[in-house]
Length: 326
Image 1 (cartoon, rainbow, N blue to C red):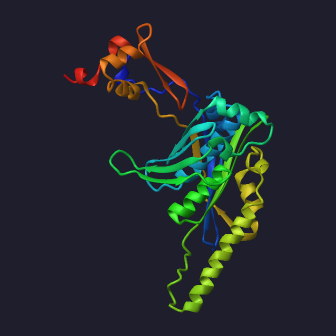
Image 2 (spheres, rainbow, N blue to C red; image 1 turned 120 degrees about the horizontal axis):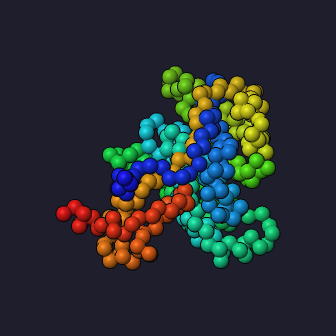
Image 3 (cartoon, rainbow, N blue to C red; image 1 turned 90 degrees about the horizontal axis):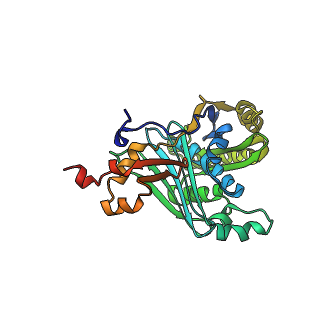
């Protein structure tokens, strides 16, 4: 017997891909700096090839996936971290999110009329040229029983990393450095990122009460942060996306002068959370007239834009909620 749509919470036919060591957290011993190295490996190819996007947009999507993975991995609770970029460029909407457990998904809406002349020039295209002017929103969702925290800023900077760092500087007053990269390789699409965050100095600047000591400690903290960023800037896209270069080797290569301490690696996975039951609930909110207009050959098709999967519903089994609840 077929499971009724409103009870069917099974996962559609999408890749079951898990990268066990996709996230490598670390900190620099004795310095107020922590970070995460993000490498999606073959997961990037599984996510990006679900969509028939231009390679320039797929690269932007790979960067977005690495970014939300980096930020969600800092969550101290069950929930998700999402990115939304809405602009007037060829990519009018960019969405990516990650749960605290590393389940990733992505979608981009492209305007072919705007994209074709931009790419026709033959010149490299920046993230900003793809998004145009608009806004970027970062949202932390702690679940249905908790308020969401959202920050919105104007799109600023040429790259997605620049846009994110502008957000943290203006909205969070939080020192953050971020590098993102994505490209198609011989092994398929690869994407990754490196994020550094300045944290409170463990020594505390208010212990002695001596202003001169506080100034000296502040200067040491600033110097430690600047040194970490200078070292991080030596990272190349090729190193970041090289499957053959282990996280341990890469982080030692970057930060061996300042004693990196690696934490427990965490997994990343293909994480679209759609189901026929969820979409059935969405359909039940439409009127019967609307449902009839959606129907073709006795069926309603609904697409999950994240995983690019079509769900078919027999019109005779779909009812407006007001009618279904009576």
